Length: 74
Image (cartoon, rainbow, N blue to C red; front, side, top):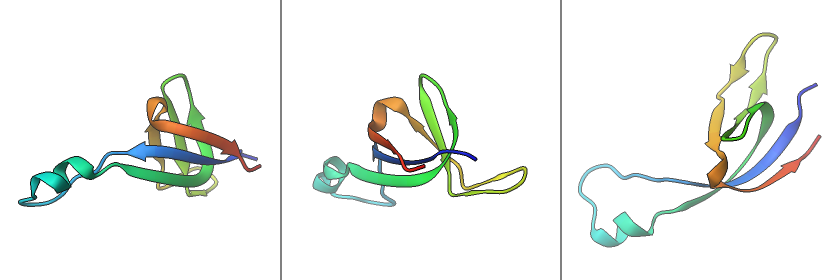
């Protein structure tokens, strides 16, 4: 059985079209993700929302420098 992990991390953001200067500099996103631990090494951690017999659903790879905390759920 794969480990289930809760990760708190900081993500980047972007906007579409013309944007005023304040909006360009204030957007830092604090994210919390929970998922199956697919892979982890020195630089990255990959989580997936669902696990099939031979595939993963919606995996996300997070750079370790962006991770603020990691908690194992199971």
